[in-house]
Amino acid sequence: MSWFKQSRVKDPAYLKYMGELPCLVSGTTNATVGHHCLRGGYRGMGMKNDDSMVIPLSASIHLQLHQSGNEVKYMDGWGITNYVEIARKLYELYLDKDYDAMRNLILTREI
Image 1 (tube, rainbow, N blue to C red):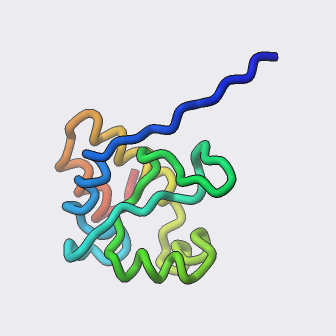
Image 2: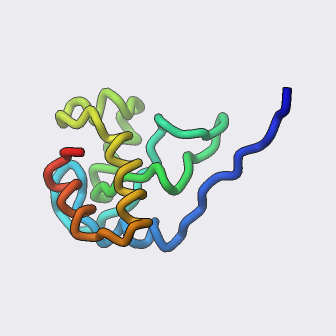
């Protein structure tokens, strides 16, 4: 059996761009930050997920999410159950430079 360490995707430009997008929860563009999803990636214990697994959230909602202690339950409370898939699709669209589709995905939450 072969063991290998998968390198973590690091994309500072993408994280910066997250701050220009509307919040996935509220739609506001005021003080948006990138939230590294806790599910759906290849992170190790105590490590952030890949930069490719990020969703834009307003700073206040981001803080509330972390204070809640349960990402899945918090997002479910907003009626957003597909946020991991949205994170994956956002990064795919970003790599394709389809910025309009990114904004549309955030506002409709439809993949």
